[in-house]
Length: 362
Image 1 (cartoon, rainbow, N blue to C red):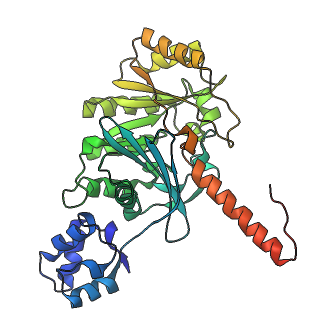
Image 2 (image 1 turned 180 degrees about the horizontal axis):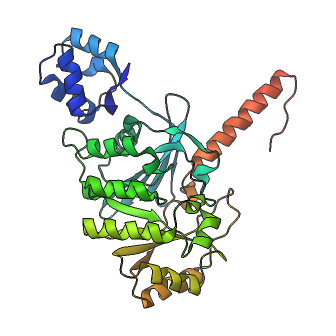
Image 3 (image 1 turned 120 degrees about the horizontal axis):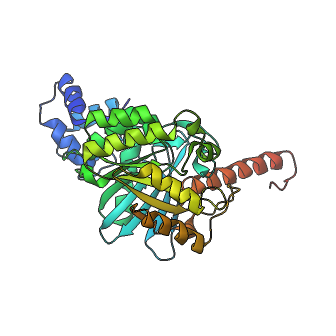
């Protein structure tokens, strides 16, 4: 069967016309899926029983399961772990801001980029997410919190540009008035810097907001932190970043995770400023999020402030990211990794019990 929520309106129209349906049926089905948000074809009550039966033979409606849900102590951030049909799990973060609600979605189950401070990549890439699995993170999160989502950040588990075709289709559907009807200006995509894919995005003229995970002022430090730096030099990456910003006339966000003793010195800040001069960019400083999976530490508040002040002195636009959800494992991949570890321990304990004893698994 075909995943109906991964079909564009045009594709669904063609499929229904091939079944002999009237041209307006696709609009009805899309309304049921994305406005009324039904979970079963039997709920599409303005369709004939015969058509509903046929739809259930041709298509399925994806329905992720909430495996875990955590809400921060201030109530402004929530993290959901969605279980997918094949047993994989992905994370979604819901954040409340004065300017509207934002959801940070995953684009892959796992990640193969290997950034050393990120829990998302610890067990590698399982697979790419489908269009429907990305849309569902928005749909089901809205339903759970009864709050309209206005902004989407593709910054969860996975590298969005490593799932390029599905992500582009997702953006097309998310901004389609017949589907979610979001503004393209409300969608941000974060990449670790796949240069040729950024160029491809620019040539497609989508105009979405771009964030680039730089995390270092030079290639030597970046290679320590991010394996992708072995393929893409900073100069080449920032050249394409400038081209993207010049084309869209919008600032590119430079994500910079501050790591104690690695990339947080005043000299590092001055070098970063030198590389960004002349580029329409804004630096988003991110103090390293505490994680059992990372051997590095976050800098002191004084060091974070000093780094920021150097950039300001160098006339580089900068903010320190407002921290949300540190009490709910809100860093990318943490909740999923903890869940998988618990599942693994449970499986081992069940296996040991079958042998007549239970072994403590650490």
